Image 1 (cartoon, one colour):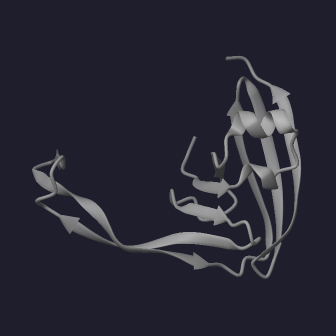
Image 2: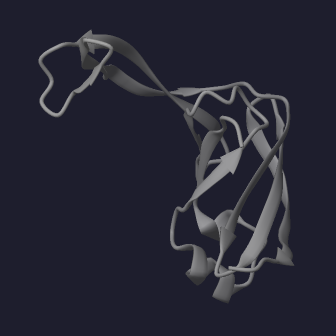
Length: 127
């Protein structure tokens, strides 16, 4: 399957029916392989901007609930999280499955501003 990134968008911005919008919920997670594929979180905001969640990482050996792997204990923790606007120019494909139906969308950006979103239900899948 490989790595991907997450897209977060208000469902009311998608070209879907009212029933589909209710099915998705307000802001579901969508997957994309159109960006860096580093499991990052991207947001298409209500004011049509593309933002990414940026943060610093550091190793914490004392974090409760940490894992031990090959004798190394601890975990990575995020610090200084903030949303950063990206001047993305191009298309971002994002997709997910809801109630056995596969949905795909294509968002067009010019200099970081959302221009349009196309797509919708692609096919029924077997659960």
